[in-house]
Each structure stands twice: as C-alpha cells, then as structure tokens.
Image 1 (tube, rainbow, N blue to C red):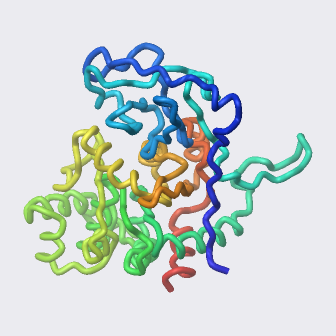
Image 2: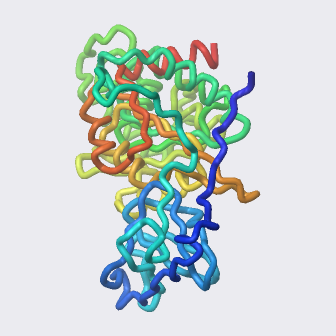
Length: 362
C-alpha cells in the first residue's frame, strides 16, 4: 500500500466562539527590529489570525517570530527583520478570544489509549525503534518524488568509511534534496576524499597516520588555494564522498560557521545571520527534516521548522522531523526548546545511515 500523508483538519470556524471572536489587534512596530508591547510569539503549530472578519493561516511560520499583517496576508518575521510601522499581531491568548487561534492537533496524530499511569511512555535508549525505521523507509520513498528532504549532519559521518559511502548512495538515489552542516562535516569529508583520513585517522582502519593532525588543515588550505569546493574536486580528481555526491547531483548545501572553525572552507558562512537565512531558505520548503549527531545545528533547525507546510495548491501537510543521536541529551533538549513534534531515534548515526542505505539504495 503506498504511503499516505495524514489529512489536515482545519479548525471549525462555525462555532459561536470563533464566529464571534474579535479581530486580532495590530500595532505598529515602534522602530526597526523592535516589536510592540504584548506582541504574539509564534509556535511550531498552524496559527490563524482574524483580520477584517476573516481568519488567515500563517503560511510560512517559524517559532519565536512575530506575525505581521502585510498586503493581505500574514507574514512571519524574525525580530531583526521588523521595520518601523510594520503591523504586528498582539495578544498572548491562543484560543481565539483575541483573534488568535493556535491549532496544535490538525493532523490528529494517533494517541495510544491506556492507563493514566504506564511504563515506558517516553523514548530512550531502551526503546525499540524497528517500527520507526519501517515508517521512515516508506516516508522517504514517498518524499523522494513528492516532497523535499533536508538532512542536518554533524561530522561523525565523515569519520567512517561505510557511513560516508552510505550517505553518498542516498544522495545519488534521490533521497537528499538539501544538506545543512558546518565546516567540520565538509572538511573531514573532503579530507577523506583527498587523503583517506579524517582528523588524521584512516577512515576505514581508524589508525592514526604519521603527521595526520595536519591533514584537515592541509585539506582546507588546498581547497582555499583552488578557490571553491567544486574546483578542488575537479583539480584533484576526486570522485567520492558526501560533498562530491552533492555537487554531482546539484544538491544545495549550507555550511554554517562556528567560532571554533579552522580555515574555514570557502563556502562557509561566517556571519551567523547570513547562515540562519540560508538555512531557513532550505527549511521553508522542506517536508521532511532529518537531523543527525549535531546538537547545535539540530536545535537551530528545529527552531525554524514548523509542524506543517502549505503547498502551492493550498493543501496543508505535515512536516516530519527526526532527530537521530546516540545521546538522549540532544533529543530531550530539542523538545525542551519547543520542537514538540520531533521524533527521536537513539542510535549510532553511522549504523543508522548504513541501515537506511541498505534498504533504500542497496
């Protein structure tokens, strides 16, 4: 049976409470980058705002941003993007009484019936994830042709020969439509292609090479000499790895800089807000996001990923968000930061990606 997206059930605006709700109060931003008092902060869920007697869905949402009435639609903007005079929605209630309605259960996800008290309600390293894998296989087969899958990756993949090859196969097979990472993932992936090491260790045997602590710096320096990653790959005759597969398949990747970066590589975005904008450009059209082994990039991506997407035909569909990590900390932190719809899988990410590729791109 082909994969089926959950249908979306909008609010019932015919109820007396919503029919009689007042318009949302719009107040002008007092100056650039500043919201008016009592501004309404967005969540990950679909949110509706009543303006001139009509309810409007915010079509491109993001947590911790504000809603602005702009030329007949609700625009969701970061505080830094506000301009003096922008009409910002104000109000702190979410049930319609102020013309603001947060709709958290539009996809009516299955909630298991059971006792109020029961064991193993959470997800931990003791959880069995077999069903998650099966659901993910079917989801990714659907998304390859009907959605956009964005992967968020830490450098752990570049340290392992099999994991690096497995993800490259997924790229070639069409299961990757965008990649968000940092300088480290790209550096060690390119070091593996160039010198067969990652941080000086052979990516297959894990044996440290003499003088290997220079290898990642030599790789960065060589890429900077050639001026770009594509020029480096071509000049050095390299054909394997994650970045090579992205270039071969014209998959966009965003490398967000860190204060600890070496070099960095030429395409790394050192300005944090430029990096945030570039990441959001990929996320705003994503329908599935899979974050793996990177706490900071995962939380950053979770904060800019809503639980829904409005398609070109007006259909509202669910956005699937997975966090894969060997540490419970990252998954718990993601939920603590408000990404309540994230699905956690606790496992070694190298094993995870190899398993996926065996099923999807053997």
